[in-house]
Length: 319
Image 1 (cartoon, rainbow, N blue to C red):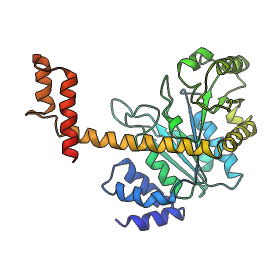
Image 2 (cartoon, rainbow, N blue to C red; image 1 turned 180 degrees about the vertical axis):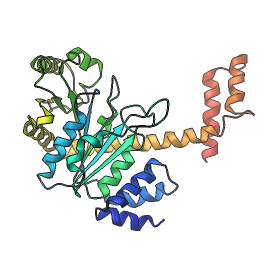
Image 3 (cartoon, rainbow, N blue to C red; image 1 turned 45 degrees about the vertical axis):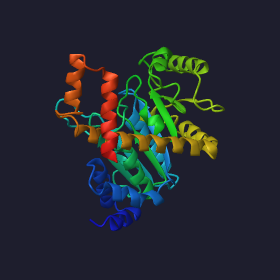
Image 4 (tube, rainbow, N blue to C red; image 1 turned 135 degrees about the vertical axis):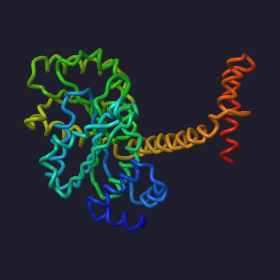
């Protein structure tokens, strides 16, 4: 495989080349290291917007509306839509693009559905690398839509420059939002389906809880926007809030977020490599996991000491 030629084709906007690169990422291809090394100098230009929220709040519809607004600005847009994988069959419906049919024939919009493959946090494990592919392929903005998340599944906050949290009336009060851990990670909050009863109460509760929460960014107060994404209502206010946050981020804030993102990505890759080497030590034998487990059960050692032995074995093998 000529990775350089494939990347060059992706840079020109060829959908097949972009799709091939993302497939190499998802499949953990042996060529993955070469792909990432080739892409590295070409990344860093795309603005990344993450959209997250509970199932049924309208993430896909809102994403489609935001894509339309960005295209009216003549921007090239990439979309990574992560769908949950079945814990039984391992399959995924990958249905988010069904709600984005209006952009299906637009050559300046690339939509990719990705299965979570059991990865928790609302994303697929390969989402950061797929994001790099779209960035290098010349996308001005990349939208990352998570699976329907519950409590504490807010991984997208570490991936995006701006995190949009969507809620809907009738899906719990402000206390539920606080319990879900989203008050600290959201940069912009959207109460979608605002034509439903209880929308004003949802906005009031959310603003009240936000006034009590301590956000991660000093100097930025997350706005609360109401929308009816299916009809395009409130879209201008949402885009204005996104632009305001992007302008506020310019400078040290953006660099800090992207540095933290890179650190998390490096750590995840390192941990995956260590788990792979750990698998080689699962068998029986001196220093093996099975042998250490037997020693713990017999009382000859404790789990902490056994873990130290295992870590030493892994690091020695790494050398």
